[in-house]
View 1 (cartoon, rainbow, N blue to C red):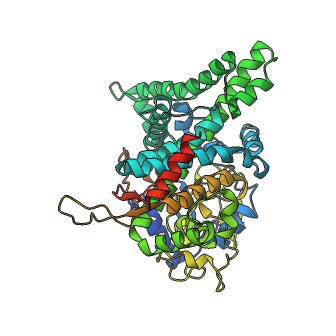
View 2: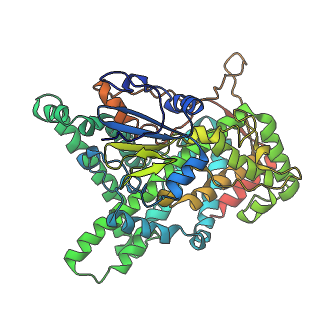
View 3: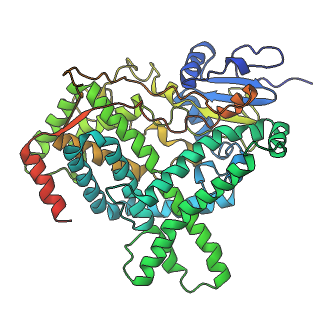
Length: 505
């Protein structure tokens, strides 16, 4: 019987396959090197598990877009159920439950609905840049409160406080728990026998971790939901996804209402998850402005020439600011928020250029966004940060307008249009009113800022063989390495204008 012809890849070793060739640090770099050796689609395997790495935009289009039904599934991880995170739409298996959840979000975030959120987004961004000016050292907190505040407002009508906010803090704790559990829990699927041993052995804390995780996630979903219910009972609830859904089921029978409440909680929780992509993107924006002051000045000059100094930017200004738009796109290209995307799985056997891609839970198909964004055949001098690559010779925008980090096919991010609004508004508002510069130490020397993402080694790998499965869910979202910067008002007039605007809301 003929063996299937898999895509090319590094030569496997006896017994362990390609296991020892999988990098623990920044795997997208090694995968990109493999692209140059083996081509657009690379295959590695170990112990019966397969990873197919898609390294080019054209291959991604052929696999994820043109075969969107086949590659619409996700690899299964038992840890999702183990910690009670089965509400997370990005990791749901393809099927009716996923379709029902996604459909509800599509209705909320379709293009015609976006203007409803824009007044609130303007309020939030003005608060953020004013806080930049007053407490610049806390810029990462201000970014978090901006992105998280918008998503909490949309999901629950909840206004986060400037200080440490209990509901927001619990939501973030769950997000970190979720990431850590994905890393720890991969062993459940890669090696069921070892997982059963952990279940049996006393003192491992395995079951206790699962119980704790269930409780944390349930609380993070319940607290804001109950907040909306309380506000509605008092007649003071602000419009939100949750309040709208609760109003629609007000007359439902008790048992049906309980089921629907769970559904609403789950979908609302997914709205908040979008905060992490926006947060990572905006921190990269600040870091890159520190590293490239010349580009910052070009964008500011365009804003000043187009908008003037007597008002703040608005959404209607976007078509008139091509350089700012090019900057927005270049940040996504140069610093992809999801260097390896979220992995896909095939619901049936498939082929790419006559190479076999297996179906099922033993295969993960990874989109190497990093390699796609560094493709020298598409992007000249790809390792250079250069917004001009998205402009034509006459200064207009070219047609390269879909950031790859939003994904592909039927799994493309449902909230991408909202994220685009939120990120663009933050960029243009910050550049219009603030200067972002290098911070100096106590001796007046500039504090160096690295142009890199963190190494993020696999801290929780219990046994080396589970590395191959861990790569499926590693680095879903990458934020910049911790850095320092100084953010100051461009003028007293700008700060006064912001204070005047925020005082009226």
